[in-house]
Length: 394
View 1 (cartoon, rainbow, N blue to C red):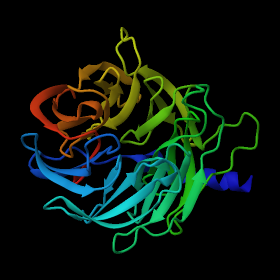
View 2 (view 1 turned 90 degrees about the horizontal axis):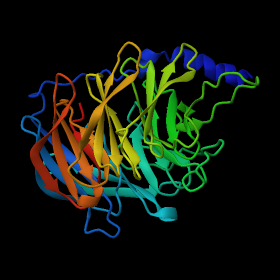
View 3 (view 1 turned 180 degrees about the horizontal axis):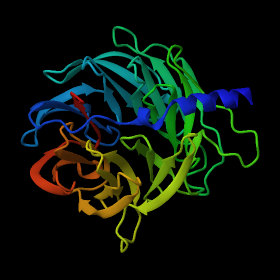
View 4 (view 1 turned 180 degrees about the vertical axis):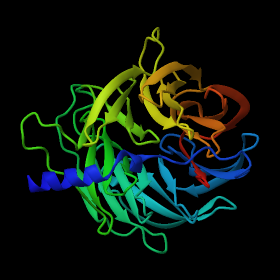
């Protein structure tokens, strides 16, 4: 009980404002040229690993700079805030790794530093804690999450924490046969780490000790029927994949891969997550198989986007900043197959869709008055693109 009260007290201190993503859209000329690094799948494809591009934020033009690093199946990567280092996953079942690289931001070339086991199977997402000193890893197949310290030379230090997601499995016997950690991110105050687990139909909340780099599952409420401030539960069979907080931190948007929905949670003063809306990412007349993949909020906080694999579209939603609820605007074809990921450039003027199964990245202009998408003439070829990261990121 003492532990539960302690954790709840900390959660109460972490007011919604601390979850706010405060970065507004930058002026178009703030960063005319950005480095874009693209992670790919190399197994059964001609890809060699991570690819580098120059992105012109004024025109939306992508120009290839070549292979940044040869490494197996780097399906997710992150760039350090100072632009000196890059970290990627290497999906390989029980032999999965996490890799570190030194980055030459001018050329886009990466130099391998070291590589460590990911402490699980098939890592699919990475993020930094808010100090930038710890790398957080979500291992999909094993349902484990891990933390690695980042050393001064950019190398990965031995892991400081490993936890296996715990909870009741969802009803989909094919997809939810075990826990599947799919997304991991520290809160803005760096006291908690949130994990979307597709197998458990929850966004779990771990306590995070930034000094020690440890993750600890908080104690559940002891009173029967008491609200659970330590997870956001979606409807059975939803399969949460990724999530994003509203800019004021009052709402959480959770993308369900299996049901192709967004569940909107209101966050009260006790940090209890109450679902207030479930909305489809698809048109009402869509029939067929679809797996929702990515979710992102525009830098101005007024528009939310998700990607559909199967329908092969980007869904657009208008955000009611008063209620947090979404209005479905429509879908835009991505010009390819299987848009596993998309990225909004730091200026907020372009959205880049990575079509995994058609080996292409397509650039869309974002209409600033309503968030609508208009396809540009920009399209580049890259084998099996599945993740894109910009530097500078702000």
